[in-house]
Amino acid sequence: MSFAKHNGGWTIAISFLIAFLLAELPLPVWAAIWRPAWVAMVLIYWCLAIPERVGVGIGWLAGLTLDVLGGNLLGQHALGLCILAFIAGRFHQPIRVLPIWQQGIGIFWLITLYQLVILWTNGIQGRPIPNWAYLSSALTSTMLWPWVFVVLRDMRRKYRVT
Amino acid sequence: MIIKPAQPLFVRHPSAKARLIVFVLLSLVLMISDHYGKYLDTARGALLAVVLPLRYAVDLPVRIVSWAGTNLVSHSSLIAENDRLHRQHFLDRTQLGKLADLEAENNRLRKLLGTSEKVREQGLIAGLMAVDMDPFSRRVVLDKGARDGVAPGYSLIDTEGIMGQVVEVGLFSSTALLITDPSHALPVQINRNGFRSIALGTGIQDLLELSHIPNSVEIHIGDTLVTSGLGGRFPAGYPVGTVTSIERNNSQSFAKILVKPNAQLERNREVLLVNPVPRTPVKDTLAEDTPTEDAGETKMAIPEI
Image (cartoon, rainbow over all chains, first blue to last red; front, side):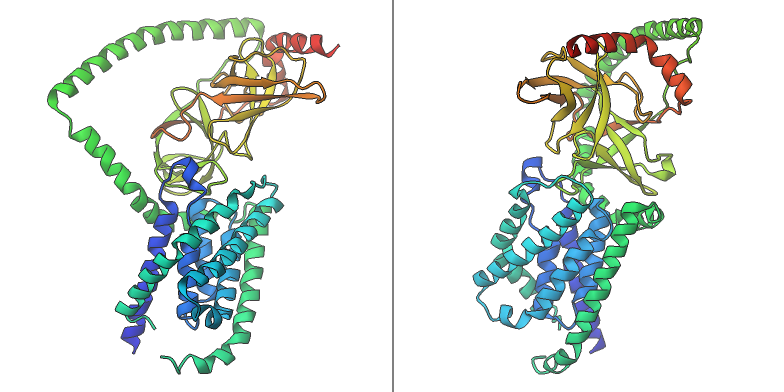
């Protein structure tokens, strides 16, 4: 039991690590605003799949790591992701039974909310607010959700993360 | 697995809410203290050191390609390149000799005028790491940190001009704000007539905007801008960019002037870090700037009448 739990923990950690790498990967300037919110997607998946293990605390830690990596104000992504984790965990039952493409709609709103939190905190700092560009990441995340979902589900089944 | 979580679910819901409140408060406290104070700088430095392996992992493929590019070349092309560099070095040396002479002469003249001598800045070469940051700000990551002597405030320069300044320093890496970042402002002057202004970043790649330039100021497309050295952050006299567009609208009080930076802002791999020169306050600044002030002020005074 404890071995299985430990094993599952590594799978979760590695999935987050890959998400961080993807979040840092250099993209051309025009493509950078379309970068999917990888870390948020991985977090949402685990919150839906095993809400009793991955929740607000892990979301907060992941967000803090993103803040340090991105050189943002400390706590910005942490705030966004812990709210995201809470909502995903709270509604994991109704979202889990939906077909994957309908889940995508929920993902779109969750990631939009996350982007809005970042936008608000940027605005409070006096950083200029970009136009609708901040929504582009929610769009690409929604489009990639089915693949992320399937890959993570297979990972979870193969390594028996419970 | 299906039955087990159903039971603690009801027990954990209130605790999840409580945890959310705790973590939201924690983030708010972090943001406020990070925004208003410098208390968190050491913590950020330590956290940067923790996530550094991630950055190296992302940077690695680019590093390997560039390593292969330098190591897997033929002998003859190396010889040709060496030959070319030798010639270039020779040419540069002759030019530098002239420059040293000019510098000495300049300092002699400054002494005659009773103003302070210009100090040569210290330089440090750093590499840019191929990692991306927040897409709505323009920042780069450097592979040199506090251990190599980098400190916040160092200016970033490439062969063409000013790139930005170091804002965050970790032990082994640091972050620099580019001049195109929307929160960046750079004191500049027009090289031709000494008119001073401030170049604001736009957040758009390769675009700066001059702020608060009256419609009537004499400025042309193609004018080059250099750093003015005011503010004491950037060394004076480094090229910044070229004016690419001027929009004068008589219903507005200020013209809209766009500038294209000279430096290869997001494309180069190596940069020079220049130490900000400590300047003695007011008296020195005034004395040093008086000669150029005349040129700038008269030009500015004419249109304002």
